[in-house]
Amino acid sequence: MDLPGVEAFVAVHDRAALAAAHDGDPATAVLAGGTWLFSTPQPQLRRLVDLTTLGWEPFTVSAAGLRLAGTCPVSAVADVPARPGWAAHPLLRQCVRALLASFKVRSVATVGGNVCLALPAGSMTSLTAALDATAELWSADGSVRHLAVEDLVLGDRRTALRPGEVLRAITIPDAALRARTAFRRTSLSRLGRSASLVVGRRDPGGGAVLTVTAATERPVVLRYPAVPAPAAAAADVAQRVEATCGWFDDVHGAPDWRRATTLRSVAEVCGELA
Ligand SMILES: Cc1cc2nc3c(=O)[nH]c(=O)nc-3n(C[C@H](O)[C@H](O)[C@H](O)COP(=O)(O)OP(=O)(O)OC[C@H]3O[C@@H](n4cnc5c(N)ncnc54)[C@H](O)[C@@H]3O)c2cc1C
Image 1 (spheres, protein in one colour):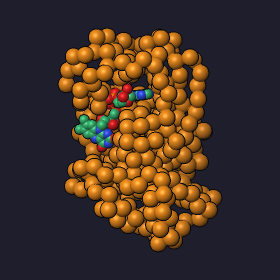
Image 2: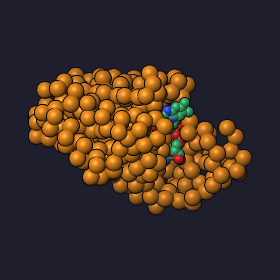
Image 3: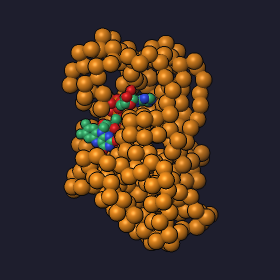
């Protein structure tokens, strides 16, 4: 849709220009794929700052792991080549497919836009929170800070981003990519938005991690020294969610149904990993 209130569109080519254009003014937003920005009225916005002209490499693979640029298209995450020992590699494609949209949307929507928009059904949040990823955040004053994705997404459309901050990249550590994973996604209809997404991880050293997204407004991550028994894990997840953020409620699923389906998925994931 047209955004008639927007008076300026700034294409930036380096960090200094980005900092000058995106200085924390609430009437300015950075633009990545634009699949959400142009999907709904933005009456508060006067200026858009285009990140895609920065020319960031979509992803790089190294001994440290996988670094996804903020501007990496969601669809490109499925193209990351597998490295020997990366047992978690199928999770990349599973989470790309969990973004319920056409190939046109997936190929322009970005990893940074998905995480920074912070919808509960943000499948790049699911992927990166489940694999202990860290976000590199650039601020307008030239400083850089690092934050676990688990702590970056705080709630439905709420993040820990400070005014003027931009998500430069997200790094998934090599160690997490070597884990075995199990994935369960549930939605109200076959082509519906995720209402519950559970990722289980069994690390080579035996430790286990359970991550719930979509059913909760922020990622809920539980860590264990070994894969827990299914019933115990389901009880832990229920206790943690109910003591913290509660079960999410919107048109994509009622809280009691989300609870039931998530706990079933948690038990299944533990059974599969064991
Ligand atoms: C048909 C359709 C289906 C969709 N399905 C889903 C779905 O299943 N799950 C889901 O989560 N979303 C969904 N969306 C919403 C949205 O398209 C996605 O979340 C998408 O990943 C957003 O990425 P983008 O690059 O297009 O972001 P944009 O629209 O460009 O930006 C989104 C927000 O993030 C900010 N932003 C973007 N990049 C950065 C950055 N690097 N640093 C700081 N802030 C940044 C922008 O300022 C803006 O506030 C859907 C949208 C459509 C149209």
